[in-house]
Length: 479
Ligand SMILES: Cc1cc2nc3c(=O)[nH]c(=O)nc-3n(C[C@H](O)[C@H](O)[C@H](O)COP(=O)(O)OP(=O)(O)OC[C@H]3O[C@@H](n4cnc5c(N)ncnc54)[C@H](O)[C@@H]3O)c2cc1C
Image (cartoon, rainbow, N blue to C red; front, side):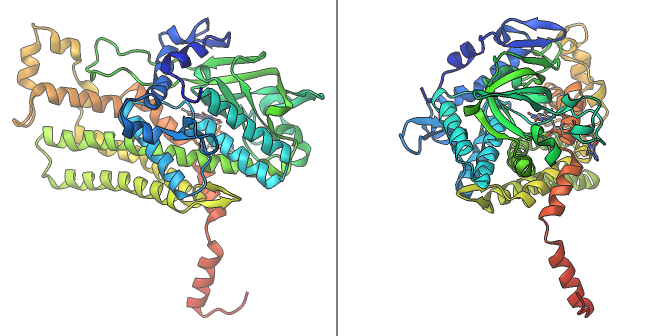
């Protein structure tokens, strides 16, 4: 098959999976008012690979390295800087072209790439073959995947084996000649209820006594014992919103419960090799932060654009303090872009697999997360209080009050009142809404907390070299 259509993807989700949202069981995720939005968002990835535009197809579809059959570019295991750069470009273009984040393969392939690296480092032929066979399976059937890494974790100060019960971290509870049985729950998993496959990676480093927690595998979303408990999303536009003529794009996160799930051996990538749990968690984090910084660039560009436009609509584009904030806004966006490009251009090789530069990828993600709220503050400041108090589309359309709004809510005479109002509403969605609060939390936590990024920056930075230079400058010769 190689490349599926939107319709084939949607049909594949009618597979008996167990999904709950707002306390109710969902029979068909494709027609659900909230989950259907996630389905349509992921489906955009399939629309792009089916595009009639040769330039788009060239970016999203590549020939299989052996057979030449068309496959999705996400299924290219990166071998060099060019592969990573093209992956970034594809992620960024997918947002530009669809107005959303068609995250159907990104996190899953971040997990799978990490599994490949670690299988190679372990030198276990069986795991390498399993990962390769699984890759061929997803290539052939063009499957949507989610990446399930974050465990629920219970008491954060305690190791997995010291918790009140053993299931706060996903672990192996049984093994036989056919496979393993796993129990636990992974949380916050993006697009999980609308994926075909779930790829599991340990959430952290495990000790020898926690070998049962060092487990990585892939499993179909409708497997026996898998239950998705979803967060509530926004659903479609409300009639009160000013919105452009494109549909809402959104992905739903879910907690995935693994209630004694059987996984056949040929889908296992790690089982008990606790010594490699840190490497797989660490390598996944690097790939995933690289994916994150790639998709964040177009998102923050659009947010920055609201500040630029609102400065003009309010007639303030030449005012000193506004220009000062616009410089900070541009600096924030362009630093992120530069670091993202640099992480792709300077990969670290594990065998023949190119891993994005871990130091730079973590610096980029930390830059994005640690300064995001300030970035939002600059935009809120430039836009003005109307971000919070603006009348809505229904007011604008009511002939009894329309003329008051037209008369009083204008800004610079160069622009229409309606355009100013539309821009206020776009900015409101991005920096003053339920959705924007969701993104503020996502910025802090998704792809790992800031403490996790600092840990990796410390591990990857040449601190010893810095110290040597200082000692030389100070004339200190001792060790
Ligand atoms: C919108 C969204 C989408 C996501 N998508 C995915 C996904 O697709 N797949 C996936 O696997 N995960 C996903 N995540 C999960 C994300 O990676 C986690 O939220 C993140 O790793 C933080 O974990 P936590 O939420 O459990 O927070 P916590 O671990 O509770 O962290 C809260 C704070 O406690 C600190 N902390 C925690 N433990 C310790 C400790 N032992 N010592 C010191 N400090 C500690 C943290 O640094 C942080 O400051 C997503 C998260 C969000 C918000």
